[in-house]
Structure formats: structure tokens, C-alpha cells
Image (cartoon, rainbow, N blue to C red; front, side, top):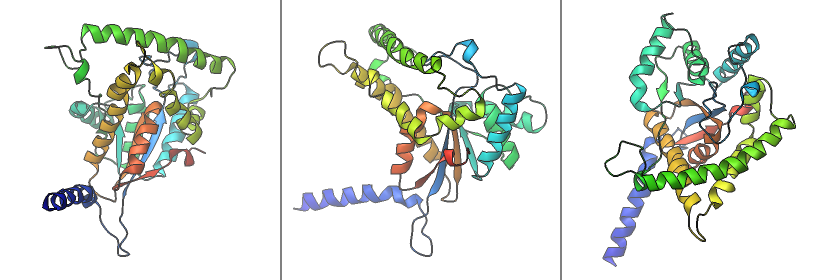
Length: 288
């Protein structure tokens, strides 16, 4: 009985500890830091994901129309009144981003094409912020790691298996995406694209894709190749990103705008909604 009581006491202590970051109002209700997730396409079209966007289908954010859209998006996001802006850059690059941002404030840096600069820097300056926060992370690849290799360097066996997995995904996902392009379903302006990517149904659709081809992939009957790979590289990664959001949260009064690749939104959103110390604010409501 004593052992059971001790276990229950430890469990209770573990369950309560995350709530310590909260502050109670005069009505006794817990306040929560607000998080808004703005999903974007990558303005530089890195084409490192499953979907590769051909040059003719790429949106030019530096064009006159593109810049008008960027200014409109910035103005709309400012209505959220964020106290912090977080972007898809690794934390170890924070000094470089701090330096670039300061140069931008001083008029010594012309904004690059990336959404980190076009949206993150631009909005941070508009709001008088002193920095833009780097919160990116990679997933836990320890089980795939090459013995004695560099960080994120996977073993030859894992690389070969991943190559087959990647080839499989390109055939299925790209085929579906190409049909959407040919049928004219994708928006043709920067503003409309962000409107589209942040709609709840689009966020659900993107998330569902990870439980189709990727999730079901098997090299042998009843193995878990797809599940294990995406657990390590995708779901774990997004949970680590949310942990970084927690790390930059200093007060229940924080209002954190997270500017990220749209595919990440669904998983991070689930973490925010499940967190006792954070509350989700929806970007699509501002993108009218």
C-alpha cells in the first residue's frame, strides 16, 4: 500500500508540474500564453521536400504584386499583437539572425527572399521587437545514426532504405499534387496561397497525407518502416519545435507568432492545444 501511495504521489507531482508556468487571474482561471501558427510555402522554393515546384509554378515574392501581398500579410498579422516572432531557423544560428536583424534595423541589410526575412524581419521591425527567435529542430535519428558519423549522418543501410522510401513517396504524392496543379486548384498569388494553406480543412488535409503513403509504407509484410521513419524525422521533430516554443515563453502574457512551413502546422497545433500553458490563436481568421 505504501508503494502504491508513493507512486500516486509521484504521478500527481509529475502531472502538476507543467502548470507551474501558469498564472491565475483574480477569477481563479489560468492564463495561457497565446500561440498563432502562420503556415507558409517556402518563398525560396528549396524543393527539398516530397513536392518539387517547377519554376513556371513558383510565386515571385519580390515582384510588385508579391511585395504588396507581403505588406498586406504583415499588416494582418500585426493585428495579433505578437510579443515574439519565431521562425524556422536552428537555435544555434540565433547569433547570425540577431546580427542580420540588427543590420536590417540599421538600414544595412536588404531583405532576402526567404519568409524568415520577408515576413519575420519585416513584422518584427514594424512591432519594435529587438529580435526574431530561432526555434527549428531536427528529429531524433539516433536509431539511424552512422556509428562515428557526423550529426544527422545516417548509416548506409538506413540511407538505402530511405532512398527506396523516398522513391515510393515521390511517385504517389507528386502524382496527386500534379493533378491539383493541372486542374487549377492552387492559388496564384502569395496572399491567396497563405489564405489557402491556413484554412482548417487544408491543415487537416496536409496532416492526413502523413497517414497515407508515408505511414503505410512497408518493405516487408508487417514491418513498420514508414511509421518508424516518420516518427523519428517528422512527429518527433515537430514536438521538439514545440518544446522550443515553450522555451521562449516567458509569461502568460506572451503572444507568439510562429512563421513556419505549412506542413508543420497540424502537429505543432495539436501540441499547443494540448498544452496547459498555451492557447492556440488561428491565423486564418486574420487572413480575410
